[in-house]
Length: 218
Image 1 (cartoon, rainbow, N blue to C red):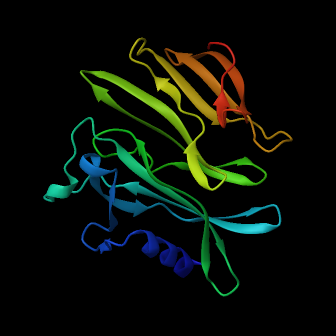
Image 2: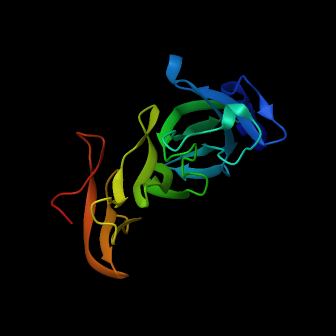
């Protein structure tokens, strides 16, 4: 399985592997907006969905590389996340069935996704949940992300605030709710102030928009 994952990764990072910094060299963006990144793999996840076995692979942009001019980022420069869902044949040949390349999150080259939690979001889908954001002039702004395959691509289907500049004393927490019947499991989105939970709402997936949506204000 590890060789199949390595084969799939090599096919998407033609610039090769940086042995010193333990990451895969790449460039994301177009034209003048293109930026160099070095991508570090998260632990691959082998899961059963329905009657098939799949491998989920994610890579997070490294933001701790010093002394290399390509990997110097300003505060406004986002990090990126790459994600793949693979089917591995009996002979070990991998096929990418869904992918997301250069998904922007966070700031200063750090996507916030290096320690993402791998979660099940439905009977036939898994993904990564994490928080990304940044601090500007002493104010922290951050959002919850839930990156899952939708069709043949990966996307953030949550994009819900964790901290907002207008009220820094409030924290919004996101978690998977107990599974229910259906293609997508619900989420629990709660508001906390001074360490105490104010309220919690259950959020369901909206197929029309292709993301989770809160109904009403917290």
